[in-house]
Length: 488
Image 1 (cartoon, rainbow, N blue to C red):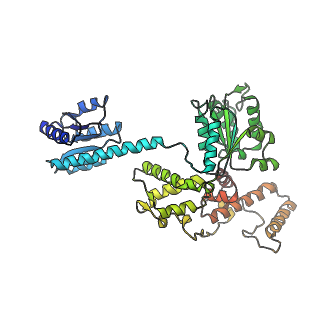
Image 2 (spheres, rainbow, N blue to C red):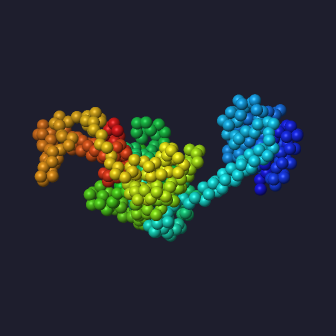
């Protein structure tokens, strides 16, 4: 058992506390000044520190600051005079566990030290539990299949393709594959191919030489070079521009590449793990993804199940996220009532594990009491919830160029259901006959903008949910919003 440390220049105070604590079976170590106590930290640490506030050679508040810098979780009790209110306030602001007024009542002092000791033991237990939290949680059969696959691939360097909906945890799987592989001591480098503009993605992947393009004032290593000896994780590979797919295929085929503006071939010893929420076979049929690249990536495929297929994991995941949010915020973790857990477990979670994590973080901040009841859950989990429609702004105000010929925001329906196609055909005909340039680009932008705005209208501005409804990735919708200049 660790000792209780007492720091006070008054010998009688040290003597009284030593005897009282010894009677309680608590080991104690005393110091007459802060300097000796700080020196002792090099060899040992206390379970609780009790320090006077006024001592020659350094105050208790200065000692508190130094100790907290080294042992932030250590409970520190500051002893102070009744009249020294400013010091008591300063002690709390500095992170003191409690202050003990002098002259103190001995039984109360011992009881206070006992409480601090219990707090120290509880903190140590929580840290140990946090250290034992597995990198991935899941008791559902579908997740156990994923864990078994990771185990079987632990000694392999084979290329892996991870598929699964947005928010289902594909990067966690990639990190686990890296950690348990022979490359686990090497770097893990991740890049989201959908989040980087296509004119910068080539440089991000392969690097560039000085002067290769405007702004390239120095040579830069790309992600392939950075991941040498480790793993390169290519997230949202289904959104990679077609022209870059050829370069990626060449690297995967012979391990050789050139920096942008470079003339000397480079090699990098990299294991590639790719991930996508899209159906790559369908993308191949559409001509949007190279078939030879697909087969090069699709050596081993791991499907990560959406959260709605592993509902038995929701309670454990929710408790984990509530604990993590509480630790980040420095508050007591909220607890879900049985009724609230039933609501969470029955929810479909279109945003998957990431949505559950966001909900738990919201509850840590917004829930009014420590025990979360169904009424405390966010609006989207309440029964009968329907997103309230909000009026759409004109496309011109959203940064999309206004068209010479108007297209109705809500096309008139016809019995055949293709009224909006007829309107679009009329608009396209007028533009083409007028010799307007870039008709394809102009109409495509208006079509994409209206789709995104409508989805955001339905989801009340929640991008992840809007992307889910549209069948695109969260990074794709973010990139499109930026490209189209939508003010949302």
